[in-house]
Amino acid sequence: MLSKKTRRIATALASTAATATLLAACGSSTSSSTSGTSSSSSSGATTKVAGGTATFAEGPNATPNYIFPLASGAYFSVANLSQFQELMYRPLYFFGNGSDVLINNSLSLANPPVFSNNDQTVTITLKNYKWSNGETVNARDVLFWMNMVKANKANWAAYVPGAFPDNIVSMSSPNSSTVVFNLNKSYNPTWFTYNELSQITPMPMAWDITAAGQTPPSPTATNAPDQTTAGAVAVYNYLNSLSKNTTTFAAPNSIWSVVDGPWKLSGFTNAGKATFVPNPAYSGTQKASLSKFIELPFTSDTAEYNVLRTGTGIDYGYIPVTDVAQKGLMASQGYTFSPWILFSFNYWVLNFNNPTVGPIYQQPYVRQALQHLIDQPQWISSFYKGYAVPTYGPVPTVPSAAFADSQSKTNPFPYSVSTAVSLLKSHGWTVTPNGTDTCTSPGTGATQCGAGIAQGAQMNFNLQYASGTQAVQQAMAAFKSAAAQAGITISVSSSTFNQVISNATPCTATQAACKWNMENWAGGWTYAPDYYPTGGGLFATGAGSNFGSYSSPTADKLIAATHTAPASQSQSALNAYQDYIATNLPVLFQPNPDYELGEIRSTLHGIQHNAFGVLLPEFWYYTK
Image (cartoon, rainbow, N blue to C red; front, top):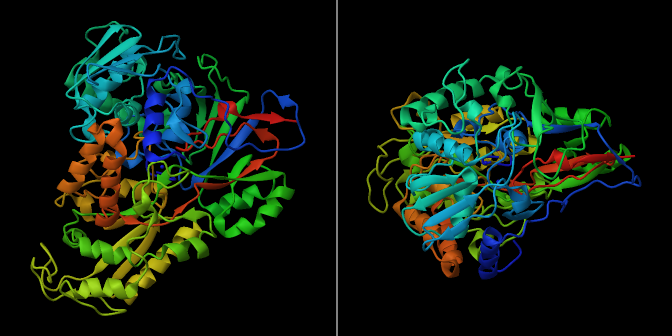
């Protein structure tokens, strides 16, 4: 899913030990603790208060705008999934316990999966959870999700051709609490659990309809709409249309009111204000202490901070990085400073299929030249005030570096305008500093511009970024200035976060929507619902979240190897993949700021900074 985008916005052991730990987490029946609070405000108060309302500040222009868990790339964000949908609709397997990036069995709807038949058969046993309408969360609800994804996989942002659900040969439910998947070959159990089973969100039978007013089928029905491909497509079309209409989210008797999570939506505005109340039928062990939880929208980090520093109106907010020196002021207002770091990396995308500039982006030397114009150390120091880490590859180095190898911690393309100029000159471009470079040697030779680039083609690009954050605006201005020194013209514009991620979707050159050049939603990617950072959903050819339509046979081969490598070879396979991506540059890497520089009211406790951006307000409580 990005700091903002989950999706788009998301490990202290050595590699072999880390793999063993992950496998143990999958196969063990021992549940992870749910009380490990990674961040909790502190004060002298010790008496817990039942009830109360807590308000949470949404990211700048990053409001929830889609409620159906089967989301396309245009809606695949932390704002929609981790911080909205998952409060109401819990995934089959829950990940993260504070900064811990492992599976959290205590918050999962099912027991750890059991692999057998040489890791070609997976058996899942559900726990005893209920939907808010009284029905049991059962095997049929899992198969409902599976039928929907199989029939509508082109609309599922986590889809990777050949992977889930394509790699499931058959599925069955021997009883109401058991689901069995038979796979097309043996897979690494860690990868399959963390990146395949992790994608499942059971769905209630109340959603298995194709039009308003229909009576939902019973769990034992044999002719439910989702049980045929055509029916599942019709169900998707109906639910997708409802999910785009925010007025349906909290409407009386809305189908969205049937939930299995700890919260129910009681109000939602077109501006993105979401009001939640506890789900009294929630089956989990952690019942909400708060009587109400509210997410508040803001158009910019400055607008949010103006409210925050009054000391009223926001209980959990954030301080803009440009105002971080005001931490003392916030402390005097009764807030505790608490940065939130996600298991994520940051980048922006290039449209490889743009009919005009796509052929230019497809040249590795061009991407290398552009990467040399991103001064990560300077941006971190000047714009992010030190609250960011560099991004050199697709595997996060924080919260800790269980999966990242040494190359992911070393910059292969340090800032250098002269190097960028040399790369372009040596490949057939006439460089005009503070002008616009032109291809004067077209062709596919080693010293020519490259395939598809015509005589006279120009280095003239458009870059759109998410508005509302001053540090991002400064960084994009710095990139534009550096590019100009190398004769690369960058026309910079901004729009809302939701608009940027809507624009940055895979396309073909003949589509009208394929005219976008570069899109930067400024939050990168946090690894969810694919938690093991192999990148199949991001960079495999045809993957649902391969937003720039990057395609590399070498990358595809290396990604596939991470899926099937035995435990003893899983880290070496991951290393080969991440090292290739770091140098082949399917995207442009940029500094990864802390997700939020959180400011939490000192009487509000129980805050967990989930490594994947999930909000868990059912753990929150007040003291007096």
